[in-house]
Amino acid sequence: MTKRRTFKPDFKVQVVLEDLTGAKSRAEICREHQLRSQVVTCWKNEFLERAPTVFTTERSKNEARERIAELERMVGRLTMKLEAAKKASNILTSRPCRNGR
Image 1 (cartoon, one colour):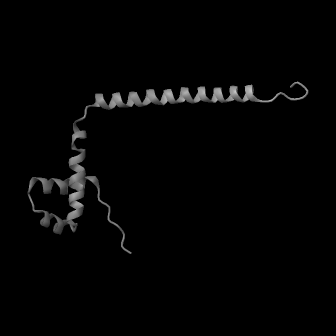
Image 2 (cartoon, one colour; image 1 turned 180 degrees about the vertical axis):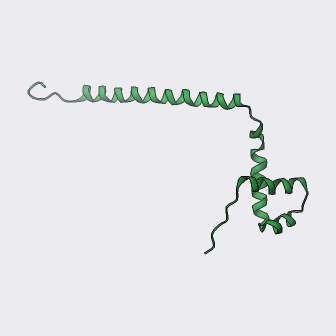
Image 3 (cartoon, one colour; image 1 turned 90 degrees about the vertical axis):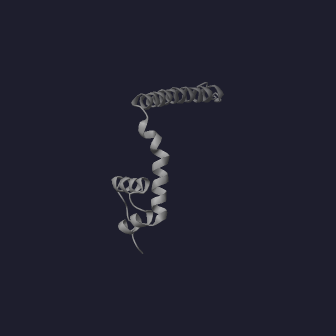
């Protein structure tokens, strides 16, 4: 059984850019790097799909992080309230013992 090859992101970018710029044909790229055309196509599609995120600002990333932190705090508070409600419910619904305890 053959082991799958892994490629570093820099190499993938290099191959995709060669394909996009038309510096070499897809067949030349595949022969040179011993890759299948489908692999290059997948890398190219992924590259193009993620390209818009390259230009996202730090501000929008920070806003998303702040929102996530706010939601995590809210989840924590709600979890604590739920636990308190469960304990109160158990105390109120428990049957009193015979000796009054």
